[in-house]
Image (cartoon, rainbow, N blue to C red; front, side, top):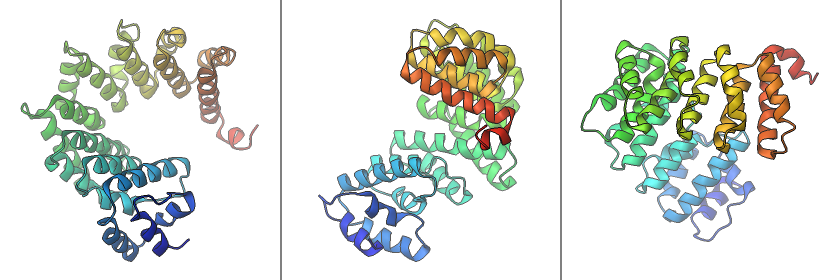
Length: 307
């Protein structure tokens, strides 16, 4: 299958989107990207959605496939669903070239949902900034764009919450004030966003806030509390996370497993080994993966050698 044939097939409304066809769109050169862009304009919207969703799935299952050029072109599509799924395709993309596009979408896109998606996607780069992997100019641009959205009182709450979650790794005094404000809010969605943001700071000072919510009566709050505990990696939270392995909400149980895998330690391993015998296939699979993470943290060489 050649790229030319792939471009011809994707323009056909009822063409089959098989793997061998779609793989031709991986790793496009600059010239090939221009050819794709020209062909993409003739593809029916429903077909575009099928293609984008298929490419996102393929990229998730095979890290050697790179459809960045396709997703970047799709960011300018007329259909908001196409644009939103294109952002999903760029979720783990770490090249700074897409930062201006995401910021432009955050500020100017006509769809609230697409703008919120862009705000969330910028969180990847905020985390890179926290790890010292971005130049100062990019850091300042990302932080100022997200803070503008967060501090705009006329902006939608959805976008403001996404901005808070994404800007959290910068961990400035102003951001901390917003996290505390959101945490104290009577709005449960703001509280959940604050917990996610606290975890993303990586700062142990937030552990007390997060741990307090592990037994919150609302399952969605317990879920994000477990998530934040795992992100912060505080060993003191392990004993409090263990009861969540029997939570009434399956999503909370699974997130508690993930958190224990990220934190590690003897108690976490014992609890996860017990979960391996629970009879709950989803819980058993998640526990197995969590235990593998712990082993890899404790002894990377042993894990890589399969010992």
